[in-house]
Length: 283
Length: 248
Image (cartoon, rainbow over all chains, first blue to last red; front, side, top):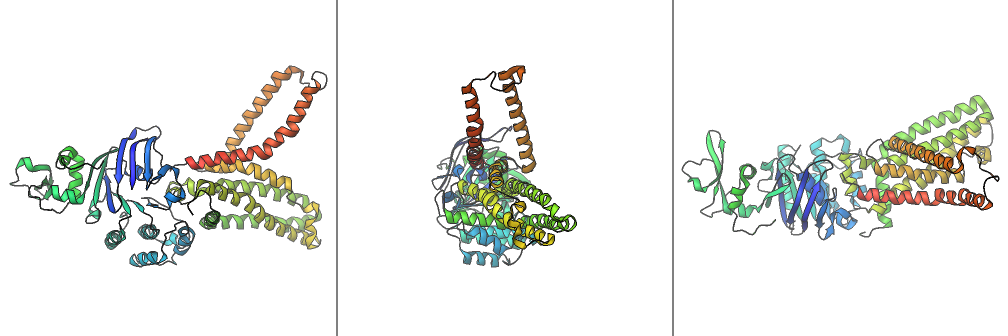
């Protein structure tokens, strides 16, 4: 599991980003990390992968201190950042020289993922498009069988069929040992994929609940006409009508509209969180 | 492969570093070899045997400069924000990253360049009209043990620069070293002035035998020991901590 305890962090000469941040991420789930620009999503991912050190507090990944960057911990973590540069070598060479460091790396899995993404291993990385490079990194990251997979804006640059392939592959690759963290602005890309939503706002976690709880507690309506005001938690204009989030009084699981939910949380997190008041908070 | 130091993993790391930088390495090797090959052919052709000392000096300078540039660029992946994440999250310990980089930029470099330069010297010897193995004669020796040792000491300064600066490491290290040595020189000069005043006399007239013995011991024993052994080890230890503390 990933445990962040009392994390304080600031970039040099900038305001405090994280102040007493606490977060636990459990294996067996895909976490969607959402937030506006500058909310601290990428910084949080870097703290988890040991690329940034907290000023105080502790971040542990399966019991290892992230900041120590020991090989035992690094074998269990694979990060795909939003912006990356790959060396001008072939896919096969990249795999040959990097896979040896991951003891659970599976060549068969890699070949299957590459086939799914329609990538050939004799292609040169420098000749691939940004989207193809990203797909290659996702395939490689999954084939390492690292228990923590961190993806920062993974669907940026992917075409529509690739986004579907991405969702399919991610869902299939999850097992009870793995933690997958996906940070994105494009919340619709994560629909039907993530198990938990964590929303960051100005360095604070303002929402952290499972999709199961959300669909049990909230309902997403696209026409609020006739809905009593006391049941409405958030409203917004949608093509001349009022759409919004309401309390799920009936208790029947509803379909979660990620975009509406995210807007609601960012605009009025206390009201949305109130619907989960009698649930045990996970942060 | 989970301990802090693993020989197999170190080997994989060295191989990876060489492969990842293969393109830029090849371009540098071809450019330098081409330049030296031209010099090794043209100078002996036009100047005959008198070109040998020029070539020896040229090879010596190229050896040092190329080595320092290589040392500065040995962590080039770490200098770019788009690449550093991959280097820093690679399951290799800091000790292995340091030793691997040192091996590439010091012993491996010395052996590789020694072989390359020897071939070029052999070509020069042939053009001058001497037997091919004559380059083993002392006049053809472009490197001796002292030169190699000096390189291995000074190279650690550039290795530290590679761990410390973000971009243009070679130039920044040169500047930092220049400022450091200037300040050190001024400080030493100032201390000397305070000790000996304006007499500018440092000899038997105003110094005791003990003082002279102490100075002799300091300059002949302590300073060489500090330079040859303590300085490189100290710089490698500092490099280790710089690498360990490196963030994106």
